[in-house]
Each structure stands twice: as C-alpha cells, then as structure tokens.
Image 1: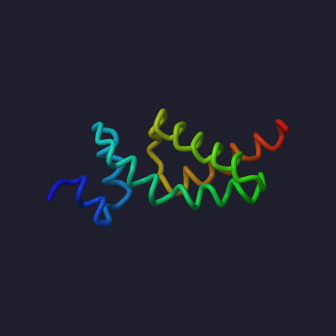
Image 2: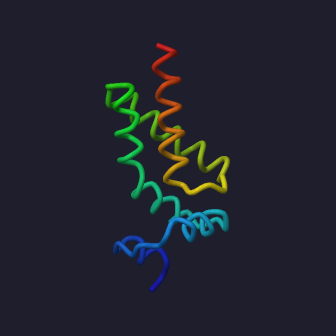
Length: 94
C-alpha cells in the first residue's frame, strides 16, 4: 500500500515519521499533519481572535511558517504555541 493511501485510510504515522517524510519532500505528510493538527490550532486561535475568518488565517499562517522552518521540536507543541503567538500578534495589530 502506498504512503498516500495509508494516510487517506487513517493509518497513524507518528509525528516524527511524518516530519522526516516532509523533509524528504513527501507532501502527503503535510496533508497528514494538517489533518491532525489544524483543528486544535484553529481552536487555539479562536480563543484569542473570536472570528472564524481571522482564526483560519492564523491557522494557515502557522502551517506555512512550520513548512518554511521545519523545526526540530515535536510538531504538536510547536504548532499550538506558534498558532497562539500569531493569534495574539493579530489581535494586537487590530
């Protein structure tokens, strides 16, 4: 079974494997990470911003920043912390 099909069928790769695949250029790994963490990041942004549109923008910015940096820390913690930080920055810019 290909990696792509495994992700679509709900096969749970651990985060470190997904990050390794993403570093190797496997875009399905980004799809899997986004599917796993976009809602928790959105919820964190929503608590700060209280608007759906702006919260989704902050969520997408969080993932774009993650992709640009690919930090060596676990993605869950990094994404949630960065989402919160970006949401607070957006709120402060209003």
